[in-house]
Image (cartoon, rainbow, N blue to C red; front, side, top):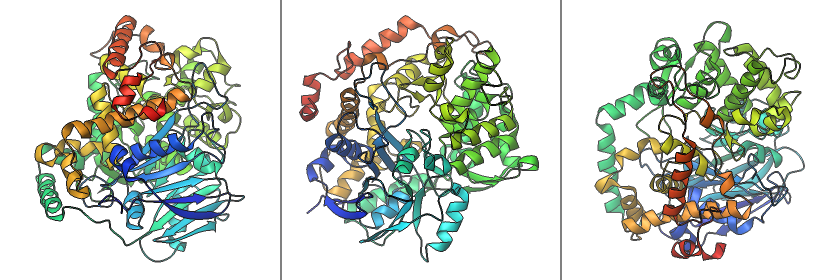
Length: 601
């Protein structure tokens, strides 16, 4: 009998054998790793041999829902896609294919529907001989031909596929041409705009000849303490229904509001991270979008915040906008490239989503090439004739198409800035903005560097802005990603409504604050040990050289730069606080034993 609130069932699909089966998840793993990101990492660690090629049939691709997903707990519909990353590599490789764990979190409706079908997890291995999709309707699982859909962009696929798949509310995840062409920075899309964007998840999915997964169900897990659960649920719903500043801000602007505030604070990625403030940010900010673009606010499953925005761009870039610009997309394809053309920005975001490309990585990579071009480290011939100047929307569109096809300059560019810097040379590695091969997101480092530098350097999937700048924040992020909870709503879950009280009511298991927090710490340390086993050491926990030598020249924070000695001091303190060896970054045996991770030694 599985823990209440869970089915304890994992659907395993082997695309080489074209078969499926259901396996049971041990209750001990549920208690220790919760679900989502944590449970996915435990399965990956247990089943995958060190050095496995991320694009081989042996790699595992998992869609992991948490115990909150599928229940009407506000802002808790997340799905974590867990796999071995095709994006990262250590500085001193021990394996030909050493890379980090990849966990990519997405909203939407897929995770809840997977739970409605009666599963806590979907695990996919193998490789189909030809393009296929997986169809799940409760206990009925089939592997269907997807040849007619191969080559479709995500927008046309979503419309065509759901028209043809049949009646009822089916939820799906799928890849675009970038994933089909094994672009390492390819992503997985859900509901046309929600994305498991980071860590090359779409590339892994494409390597398995898997175009899509579609699911529908009508089940619901049992709740252990239903009266307690309903009481908590009603109280948290009421807190979201209050039209306070927090709720209304999310509904009005979503993360787009951060475009202006981050630019004022000097924490925005501008001109390939050369600056922290964009002088034309208002042209692409919330008010401009409210006036010119947005027509509708929409929400993920059981969410009152409705932070996603849709509408229509106009003029030469007349496109339907499913969701944009968020802070990350607006910065990486806007401020970071000095693009302030609002309609052009929306066209770029729409194109990246349709091709199925991680917008953070493609925006970072484009900015790197723009800087290399401006410096004279590359010429127009290197770029296949593209005049890749700052602010150039058309050139960015052309480059994005080449990347999605891995054509010409698009072949090395598809692998990101670390690969490009190795080809270009000339010191270009100093302004290649990545950690472990994974490009940084839209939050710049020099202002508030004590937090942001540690955040990026220590992220277990390579550079990640959601990681947190200290151990407590990192462990909390692990817990949210494992429960299925959205970080945007975490401030509503305090006191009586804190996450562990919901988990107690759902499962019937007792969770002290100490036990709950230790679970987050356990998950983060397990990811670290996965990476350590793959060959990553302290030397890989770095930030790019540019942040130590480049000073901001514009805005209130002109002159901002990262102090190298202070960064090393902060890292030493971080390792010491974590209970990790400062010379290697490996958790000590004592730390691993305390966390119940002695099996990793």
